Image (cartoon, rainbow, N blue to C red):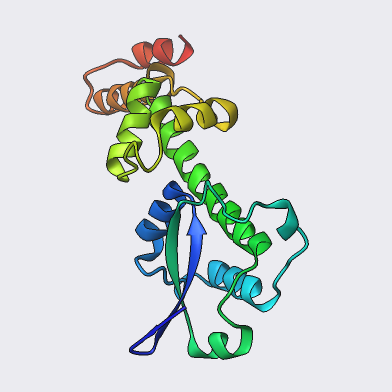
Length: 189
């Protein structure tokens, strides 16, 4: 907990890529005030500490090597406190891990679906969102994407170029450049 000039924060251990995801979405310190769903989720973790699995987790959460500071209101501070149990810390991490991985799978999947090789799609994602190798390793992203991502390749010839060609031919017909017979042949081919 940190109380500086009326800003109260809760420090939460997280994985490095989750920290990066939280920072790019909610700033540093993390501020959920513009996201009602995440704000309510975090309030719930503070409000109802869950200790049911605390004994299953080691004293130090090794994979949770980074820490994020999450802003809370003075009201939440006095009403719910400022600590998370280990069980709730893991729940927090998993909640945002799922969001982060869904973002990655979507962006890499779309980029790859547009014809960019998978390795370039992953590197592009890492560069664009600054998930450096020390934050989220290429191999870890690739492994998760192959297990859980979806690839649906866009066939430009069928889906885009043929529609553009149809528009061009229709416009040329309207100008009197092409005959109705040519348009009919093209549409049935």
